Length: 158
Image (tube, rainbow, N blue to C red; front, side, top):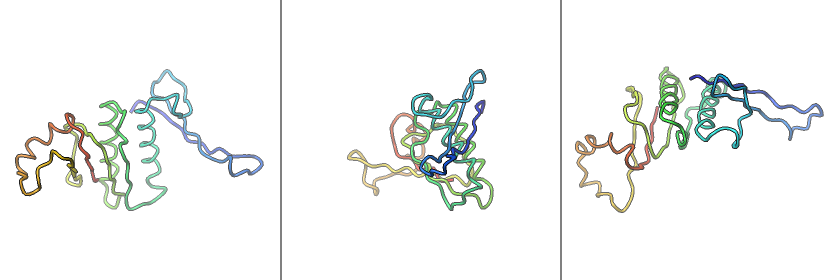
């Protein structure tokens, strides 16, 4: 992805466990040095990319039947959002891998979906038609254009 990072353990020589932790350092441009990941140094999109890459790196260390991420793509530029989505899809496409729930009010058009990907759109509000008036075929024809034009809750299950 053209970025780099490292994770290190913060220890205390006096074994004060309240001072233990992790330090995550990242860089997003080749000419930069690794910098500690903070809310002040990197953009929101860079922090979200870092968080997702960190979670995916831990995938095999901490087993879980599923993972849920909420609005992780907020603040990401479309290039990184597409890259992260493709990485998650490739990671979970292996048999026996962890299932992901990605909750987001927006999702990019023309993402690579595989047969294992399910998209659920939760449409709610005063303007919604009652379910018995829905015409599913008409909905499918217009759904792809709605993703970027209107905010809808989208749950992508991988």
